[in-house]
Image (tube, rainbow, N blue to C red; front, side, top):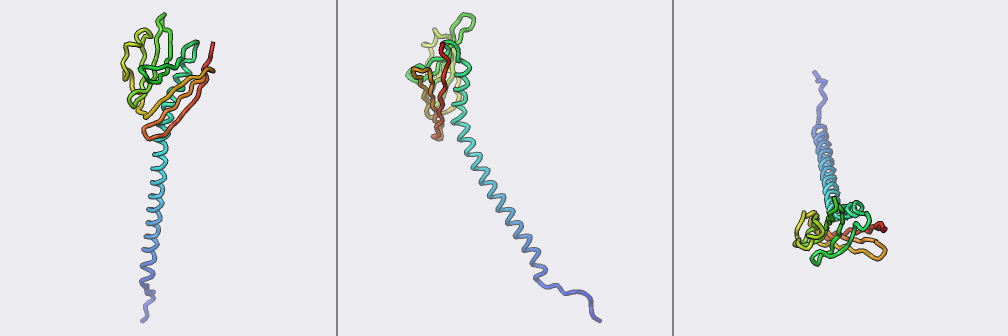
Length: 162
């Protein structure tokens, strides 16, 4: 009597296993490749965040304080500083934004008490390597920030004159 069973060889057993292994390895390589791309995107995003955040912050502060003689660029204890003046109930207040000891600081005080403030007074906004700010004769304020990774961002803003 002959059996109708077909004999299977080793190829018919090994082929599906090899196909499964190839599929698994391809999926693994795709995942590893995608993880590397994601890490590079995250690193670039962090770099841009640090450098550009300070520039955006200072730009917005300048726009908010852009009133009659409300903005001044001066020194605060030998540090470049942005001074934002505001009259509150007849008292002149000034906000100093300045770079000192590796950090950008902001402090609000009465303008007549500003000389009493020591460097490092106020709220530390962010750690940076350098921050410079200048104003030219055309009321154009230029400022640049270098973050701790060495990336530099800069901007220029024209302020209203009256």
